[in-house]
Amino acid sequence: MPTLLLVRHGRSTANTSGVLAGRTPGVLLDEHGAAQAAALPDRLAPIPLAAAVHSPLERCRQTLEPLARARPELPLHTEERISECDYGDWTGRKLAELGEEPLMATVQQHPSAVAFPGGETMRGMQARAVDAVREWNERIEREHGADATYLMCSHGDIIKALVADALGLHLDLFQRLHAEPCSVTAVRYTPRRPFLLRLGETGDLSSLAPREEDAAQGAPGAGGDGRAAVGGGA
Image (cartoon, rainbow, N blue to C red; front, side, top):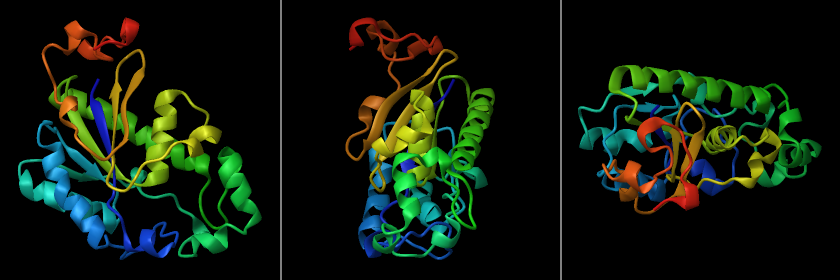
């Protein structure tokens, strides 16, 4: 099964102003976020990509623009199910103000019980994103082979929810995870189990490039059999 690179969008104007952007239209990358996006093609240069999938929100499309220019042959797809959580009435409000809301304690400690007023549940958010990944895994494998790597550009809570699913963590534990803007999280899926290869990586990604010796050295999930490397591998 394929390897998935989860890219969080670059830093946005909402990030720097402390606003919960949610699905607010027109939220773009700030100057630093644009520089992060510009650096992404070089970071990903060693890795062959079968496709790039992105949330429909502008900040995700903008993050992938430099990559699309660097790889004009790379297929780009929009996927509604990896859009930001629908925070409902919380959308557009200051995070400092939301910190005083009684619901925030539940968001932090028991997110599986959260239903945002006028929005969606956090369980529903995770379920739709996981469904999207499962379907894209099947499509990428069918069209490009089991060793293919593809990319999804999405949002912090979506990425954390997908990582929790990959690790077999209950959603109530997903707030223990973190992904910086424009960081790359890598999950290798196999028929037996997913392997988390990187979490919130902001530096060099060259070790994720496919290598013939991975199977011999015991790379996690190498060869697609889903076996964990005894002793930790190389």
